[in-house]
Image (cartoon, rainbow, N blue to C red):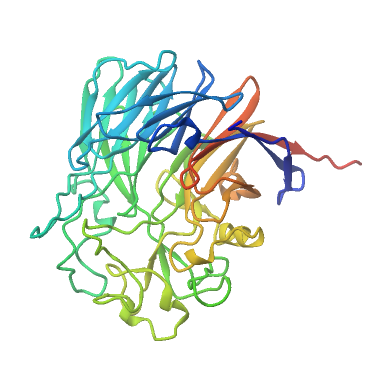
Length: 488
């Protein structure tokens, strides 16, 4: 039998002694069992009408029975390209498919979840559609077209770099409006700039750069969409009524030299030790989720970090000892920081800059941070024996995925950690964004590298589905809250 079943609940006391979370892994499905060559597990969505999970992974989408984890079938995206994302609303699945030549426009395929048959013709969008989501009313699909450079060929001064954009698809008419990230937008100057460097020089090998949409979160009212521009370290705000971008929010830098923010910057120092270091980190979130607190919108961001790749492998990330670095030359021989991967675009003698915040943050709609987890994610992974020391010099545990669960009047945030020795997800109570509380870190044996997370409710029971990229497994967890009441 290909489905691993478990029935153990694991509880953990929170900082609030009255609340704890219990997590039970219901099943785990290894996608190699589907016998579809090249099928992976990257993004997962739940279909309420058929109670199935749709798992997107390169060559197609595996469809699994939610209750049992049994494989039902596969939806192939051949000959269109590779599927990057799936979203579902009221029995209609939307698949984001990049072209075989990723510099060319991709398509969105619409699939009936009961029949697994395509509904209408493919809809052309921008280059490299990496993520998509339905607006709350289901009328519009928003697509993040990342538009990353292709491989630079011999003799090319720069690779082909299609513009990043967001496509809005009218689900009823299939009309498409594709919006670029215009440099005239208010706040655009807050984004990272290429090829300029932090010490006043230029990178002749760094080609011109345009922002690359990575992820889209929509506020619960359906008025605004927040588009993550990961490599550029910013967020573009899209007004869904006017269907226009309003402004750019720059996300700034995290100071790893402050108490509670310390990191382990060295993978070859014989052990793991979190300590304050004179380095700043670009937040550069991957996944983003939105929710409301007292009538205002807040954004939960997984601060993974990601270096700009110019298409030839000689991008902006370097460590000391690399030739031609604009930042690493300032790190002394034998320094604790000698192994840390840093940006040679921003960094200067007095301002060393690395990638990622090694945390998750909650920001208000203006971009102001109201909560950051500091180094708690690294610390919890260390204490549970799943921290990967080989990643210390890069971005630590690399928080990547975010899912929000509304349960018993509270809001839980699940933060997937991409770089741990076993699949790990931090659980926080973020009901009050100003006072988020750590509840637990869920470790899942047999799973590695949670990529896509989705939370949903079935007949009063709360579930979290997780697609694990490295192990190519999908796991389902049931989530419960427990309350303790003091006797008087």
